[in-house]
Image (cartoon, rainbow, N blue to C red):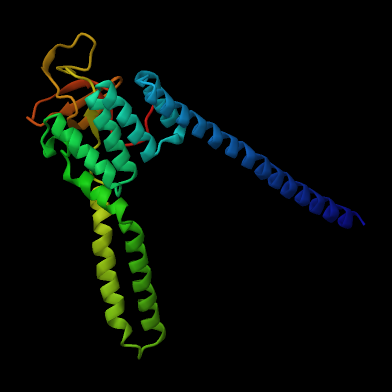
Length: 264
């Protein structure tokens, strides 16, 4: 009798736990929908502010949305338009480059990047200092990681078929061709993973400093809109190298990173 009672109690607890999980999931769905709706409303508010010419408040609202985890290529594109209308060329170019990171296949973003690059009188190399970054974007655009996995699965299946059926010689070219193609395709995203982190100079006249210190002296000036490799970081400073080969420190607020989501 006691064993029966224990079994019934366990089943009751299991049912209760399942019911609680289902209840939590059901409660989470309206909360997530409400958060999405609120983000969309704030996005529309930012667009309205930009249309009225209140670009600083529009940019601040776009930034708060991005920091809260709602960053999209569309949001960054709209932020770039507001920054450009405000006259902040470096911030506009940074926002467009962020949009390209999120959606490498967007041709409109690519055209706007080229237009701003020419307007800022920057060479193509000055906004693309690391060729491996372009390799990483191409890998994301064409989903080469997924293609590589599929090819390797096909190769594995063909090799398994050869083990099971010794006479299935028709699988030999499939097995080795898929393996070679899979390894070749996988090499592209792997190479892209070695790209250096970069940042865009978003402030006109941003100084290049000789040390990561508030008392450091300026050794030069960075070009607004230029994309620089970020060599290391130290508190509110980043060590960078410009297109002329000059190295030094800059404020992280002056050289905004392109990799990773925005942080407050």
